[in-house]
Image 1 (cartoon, rainbow, N blue to C red):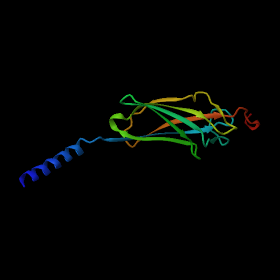
Image 2: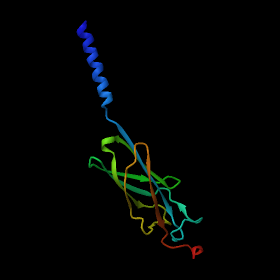
Image 3: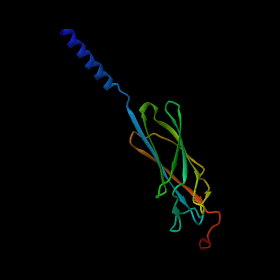
Image 4: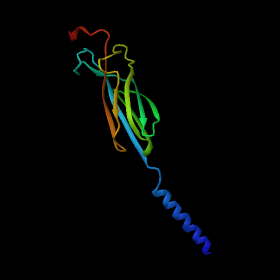
Length: 146
């Protein structure tokens, strides 16, 4: 009987050690907005609007050196989001977000300086990083803008 109690005690002790030394998870989030600068004047005005369905790629390198590639599309508010939960030891270290395409036929040309944004990801678990907006412009600026 004593060996059975000893075995149960050992089993419980092992369980407690595993719980204390368990793998800690980490969750990160990256989001941003994609807009159409209708007048191509590099300022957001009442004529400008968000782009739904625009494609954005996010490439991240983890603390362990693994490269992760994400694809996201903007929602009706022009916002894209990438989120991941992983072991804390393998969390994102640095990322690159870049616009891929706009499916709005009237606004398909990338604005100047919107080829991509590199950033370090130093946030604790549960926090997010906001990327500056990516801007598309129309091929032909409407007459009311001039």
